[in-house]
Image: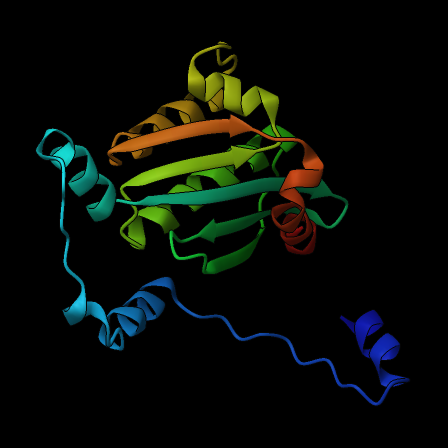
Length: 186
């Protein structure tokens, strides 16, 4: 942060870190001040698709980007949760315990799932740049080692609390916000 303060100082700009907003407080704020909520109505023209349309309307898709990072300063994760309306909730977490790269990736996913559950998400697309974690969660790879098995079981238990979760592996450049937050957290 000192580097940014020095860089921005020459332009008479002052760096002020963002304050954190608790996820539930933000959700309460959005619900409380949604003036158009009373004006909305669902009109379905085709009775054969009523359930599908109603389900999509009641439980829209959220997008979760997660990444973990480990370096000499420790381990951290970056989480970006995007609401169906396009609002970005970002979190960087620093861990005060030893973690491998794979541990950090699982920690990022677990914490992201918990945040999504706290925000009331029912349908979720989770994106990570860790092929190993994505394939283990999707059932393509076996989890080896006691810690990895515990992480996988806990992740699957959290996923079971959603209506539907799609796990996708994305290239690092398409996960840049979560990657930057993870580096900042570590």
